[in-house]
Length: 154
Image 1 (spheres, rainbow, N blue to C red):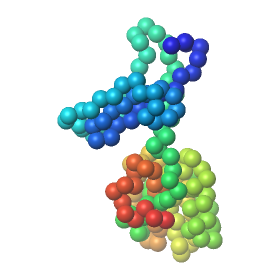
Image 2 (image 1 turned 90 degrees about the vertical axis):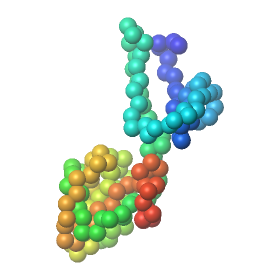
Image 3 (image 1 turned 180 degrees about the horizontal axis):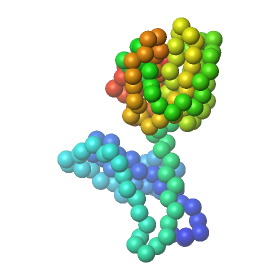
Image 4 (image 1 turned 60 degrees about the horizontal axis):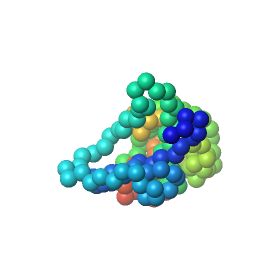
């Protein structure tokens, strides 16, 4: 490795099959390939530079790319109580959807059909929710976050 150059790597794991490779294309230039006979759920990963060395890691979650849908699972009369990026009045839920879709930091939105109020939310994916008369909460769907919800259709 040359310290003055940027190198890209990818990591993937699914059903106990772990792979590590170089470059930007998944399953190309595989450096390590391992099948765990007793796989477990991966909640986090850790990376480090060799002891005594200095390194700068840049992590991009390509699996976390917004798929263009919002989840409507169990969100009737539920409102997210999180950091509000923008609160505005819109003509329709579709307009609120469009506003959230175009902002990477928007992770969901509250929409009230009676008042036409749209609140764009920025949060981790452990949303704090509260009951609310008339408001509905919609969360952005990512490949890893909407698989268990059949209502990820909007």
